[in-house]
Image (cartoon, rainbow, N blue to C red; front, side):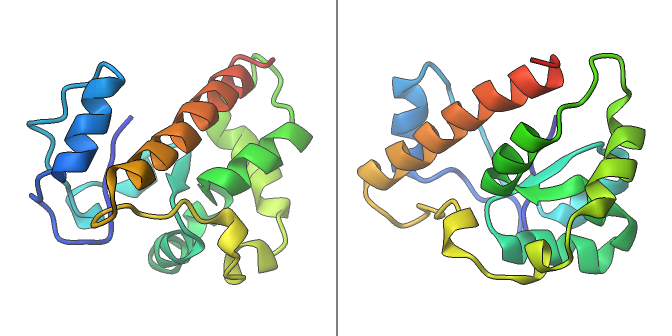
Length: 147
């Protein structure tokens, strides 16, 4: 698992993000952002983004990763309809099933799929984002386990 983004790297987490992390038992004081160019996204089986714009940028740069690239909320909906057999390897399974998604899913710009970036927002926005990711993590783990 790794994290990278479209912004320049080496940015420290904002104080509200560090505080919300601490509330949830995470020490994020040493976390620094990394640009997507610092990693090879082709090495990942699943790529999850906060917004469709992010997904489109990745797919434009790496077209063969489109079947593996979703917004967090898109993936949560999609995974409920696409149960992966427990023993199915993730990458080839997504190559097959993720590639059947309509192109409009990546081209559209739906506010409903975005997880707002709370970068300069008050602490409440950071908590809302953390709640979205907590719920997503539970769904993702269950899906990966075949439940």
